[in-house]
Amino acid sequence: MLIMLLARARKPDKIYFLSPGSKAYNVGSIQNTIGERKQCLLFIHAMSGCDTTSALFGKGKKKAWKLSINKDVQKISAIFCTRTSSKESVAKAGEKFIMMLYESGKNSEPSLDDLRCRIYARTLAKKSVTSNFELASLPPTSAAARQHSLRTYLQVPILKQNTSYYYNHSLTTQMTVSGSRVARELPSSY
Image (cartoon, rainbow, N blue to C red; front, top):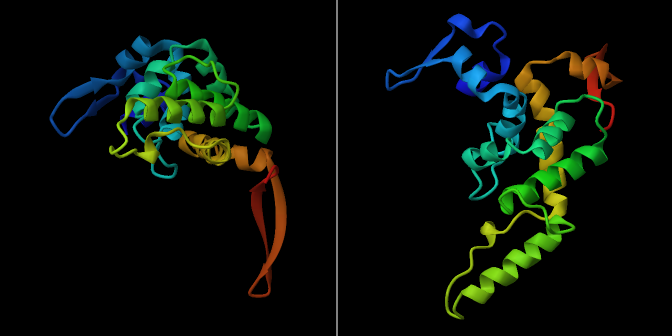
């Protein structure tokens, strides 16, 4: 809830968020503190896991938020917040962000699959033969990251409550339901 207030409040001077522990947060003060990183909030929230997108194992919101200082992450966030972004640019940006998340901000591997292979080899080199390996600790495959990125791209405008996204970037399909015609809006790239 606090993330939504921080991202969406326009005149937050007199908005306070009261947590269950009776701590009050001044939304305007927090917005001033985070500055331009406010634009990354909804992207970070959706990409790192929310009600409708899955989380990446062991990579929480705190780690993702720390990356938002990086100008490249701010550019990636802008791609997810632009309704005219192509599927390919979203997938590429999402993969780059996930690679940065698993490499603590560095981006040295050419692809997520290469990074996954390197992390797997490095982890096995440190383990004994009889120890267990947790497969979930590896980054997702490029194909899984693509799907996660596309889900995130669809989720960000919903979090913004930017319903015009669906009307400006849509393909109208006609359906017949119980004898009456119904128009349904679908994103045009899907």
